[in-house]
Image 1 (cartoon, rainbow, N blue to C red):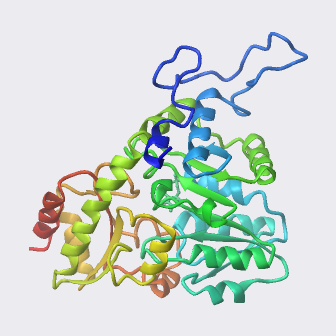
Image 2: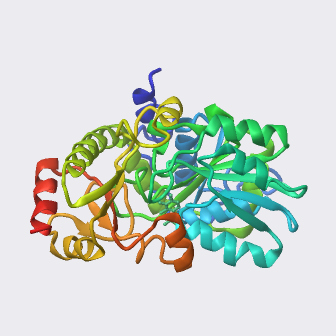
Image 3: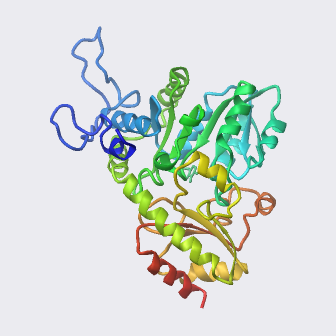
Amino acid sequence: MKYATRILHNGNELDPRTGALSIPIYQASTFHQPDVEHPGAYDYSRSGNPTREALENTLAALENGTHAYAFASGMAATASALSILEQGDHIVATEDIYGGSYRVLNRFFNKFGLETSFVDMTRLENIEAAIRPNTKALFLETPSNPLLKITDIRGAVAIAKAHGLLTLLDNTFMSPYFQRPLDLGVDIVVHSATKFLGGHSDVIGGAAITRSPELAKRIYFVQNGFGAILGPQDSWLLLRGIKTLRARMELQQQAALFIAEWLRRQNWVTAVYYPGLPDHPGQAIHRGQASGHGAVLSFKTDAAARALAIMKQVKLWSVAVSLGGVESILSYPVKMSHASLPASERERLGITADLIRLSVGLEDPEDLVADLEAGIR
Ligand SMILES: *Cc1c(COP(=O)(O)O)cnc(C)c1O
């Protein structure tokens, strides 16, 4: 079956009891056990819930995994997946990782003796150089946020395998529609399902997906033990959003490319960061590991004042945190997604006050361009 069909027909689309074309929202905390000696498939919704399970099985199918676990947010998924590591372990992570992931590694997990080195993973030798005797995992994010830097997934996995390390990858920007890291040897994929998977800016959720039964057991232990589960209502919203994943990704990508090309022609734009542009660094590597380039891009203006003026004047674009929804969003990484990074670190990474990140939605791209243009007058 082709991938586009599998998004809709993966064995989790029908209510097995009634045939309803939408999985019911099993808004229940607990389940009657007719035979106490032989408990049924569900006993308590922290441990398992039919709506959440339909979502988890769908996500496993879409990432070509075998096991998926849905969490209350992308950060809950990331933090729960990282919790399979032990005190004294060391992680090597992408330096321009999502700000919340940086914060949880640098200010939370470190308290429990889990150390992280942040490196520029666009150069594989930096990964190799950061590995220590106690390194246990690589944590990748590609394309990265907000400068869309590309890490060679196969190359990073080869280094991890040579050193016996786990690899985790945050696949939020591409979604499984464009990039399926488990096929490239990654052990655990994490998502902020809040973004493209949900797609409608109406739910916060996350997921961790693997094809290793052993890792699955460890992640489930954290999901059930720590309890940062996704509720049935939110699980249903994600199931519903995922049905249109292909249509959204294709159209939003098309519009993103149109806008990236337009931005590149403007004399007040000094740089455009988008893996869909032929001269984007790492573009060839990205094309070898993903089937598309997504709908998120960033650009720098000739002055911070210009960036601020655009954000104050746009009418069609929302100025907001988040990305991946059907409505176009313009965000300001310095004050939003990357505010939790120290200023010196932001400066070093090139996350400057003249940088704007765009998440392109389903509006007509010509209207979106006209709205940006109005902002610079
Ligand atoms: C938003 C985001 C997260 C965090 O997800 P939440 O659902 O907000 O907790 C993690 N990684 C990336 C790349 C994100 O964009």
